[in-house]
Length: 380
Image (cartoon, rainbow, N blue to C red; front, side):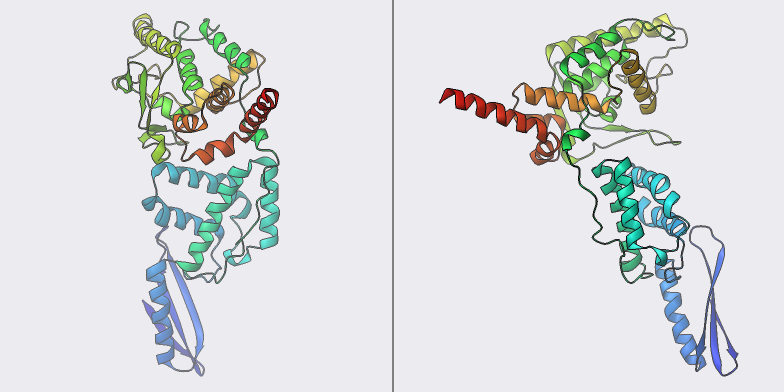
């Protein structure tokens, strides 16, 4: 509600309104109007902006405050939970620590480009592009949706490119993979449930199918039908929040994968072993949901625990310390090196297109091309 008062020869309006996030009241004042009518018209226009957008600071809003509102009010209701979780995490861990105390209108193009360059020394090109995309989207909304900025100072910012794509693909050689998996077939010293071979089955499945870790941890036994396994969901385990099942990453991520004979045998043995472990250990519970992989209390395995265990095995076996995602890359690389058609590999991985597969494993496809030309040269 606006109030008006005359100060000397001019009029002033004062608007008091509640903040949409905190609920606390804020004030907006402006003076210098020649008549009360002018002040009333200007106040009505300002109230309309406040009611429609929730912002009326003309760029004086702190980036910390703006992102808090932007995420909660305009992103959370409009994107998938997994997308919101990733965006919120990038804002909290990467954007706000550096820019939170700045005002929106103080955002400098030169300083921002310098920050992007620094990020590239720490993260991959893809990761930096995702962070920049979130930031730029928020600033675009500040211009076009909320009208609190006139232009986007970080438009057309350049993210330094990956010099060699192969450097970003971490995977095991065939011998390294075999060494890693063989280490899981023996009882681990000091392990609480030594009789369990769950991790051997889990990592074998990922390494021989290329499915994502979230897809693997979401699996139920009824997703397995003979030598085929259906991928139609993924487990999302947000930091400091409850896990939940979501749809696959992309439309093409939903797929049915044919398993090789060895993987089928490993899963059959794991199903038997799972029941044996429940009988062997008093506090080990079966999963009520028929989960293929689960904690001792029957709930989903935690992704961070799986990653930590993976790295422990790498260190113990004197292997490159990678992450479970390296098994997905390993499967793709080994398939391509074995001569598999790239379209088949793309569909097996659930990529959005063959181009994604080709770009990701460019170094492998180039080697295959060179080897093929060598064979052709020898033939003719």
